[in-house]
Amino acid sequence: MYPSFLPPLVNQLTEHAAIDFAKSLQQEAIATPLRSEPILTSFTQAGSGALPILLVHGFDSSVLEYRYLMPKLAEHHEVWAVDLLSFGFTERPAELAFNPETIRTHLYSFWQQKINRPVLIIGASMGGAVALDFALEYPDAVAQIALLDSAGLAPKPFSRFLMVPPIDRWATQFLGSMNVRRKICLSAYYDKSRVNEDAVLCGAMHLGCDRWQETLIAFTKGGGYGSFYPRLQGITQPTLILWGKQDAILGTKDPLKFKQGIANSILEWIPDAGHLPHVEQTDLVLEKILAFSTTPVAVR
Image 1 (cartoon, one colour):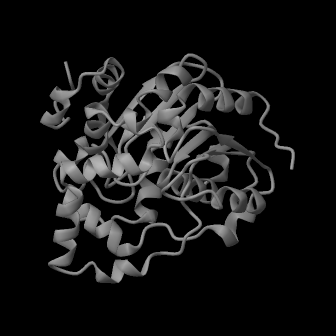
Image 2 (cartoon, one colour):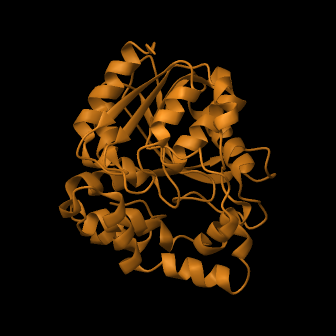
Image 3 (cartoon, helix red, strand yellow):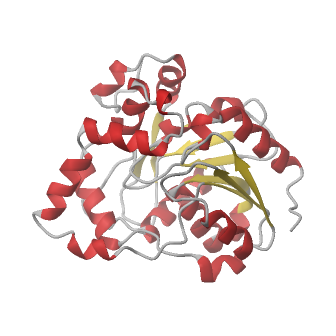
């Protein structure tokens, strides 16, 4: 049986991996400094091991993007995947701001209450920027970092100033279309044949959550994460940069900049993969992460 907090779209899933992963999701009230009441936070956990792994999803996404990678990682490690504040199936309190600072605070509260040991934090796309921000602010909480086609090198977009009524509503309504979500998937995948109904559903299911539109508008108006490049020298943890060779979303120049900016880093290209190598080339990504987690010191 699926958790009651998942939107009705979950009943349309057909792939066993997606079904099993969705059934594993849970919600727990996480106390934070952001407000007096705790925040209902959605997450899943599996596996055991000395080094815990924390998986962080991308922009306008959810933990469902790790439906293939997490079960395989859990055969070797204790693994957690959490929906960030204002994203996925985590509660979106009306009185909160939704920006990198509140996202970071909420994530740290989750880490304190559920893990409370240094982690290998893995961030995909915007989740990579979240991971970098988290490691810079809370270095003692992060032992290692893995970036999957990571955001975090582009300046905050000028378009955020255009997010005024009614344009903000029109823009998010456009993103809420299933046809548009399918087109987004097609752009993110190298192998277009993998864009089946479950791929679209997993990328769109959170759209049925309360206040999805309002929080997406609020986050977008703030401009998101911007560029970390001047601050990358502050990242001291061993860092693995994994990048799809055919990434049509961020291109292939940014991984070289990340490697240049992060002293203790190594870059590994993932062939036959677009912006979501952990979805398209799960086994190869798994192999690279497992090798890094056991011998994390990079050679420049």
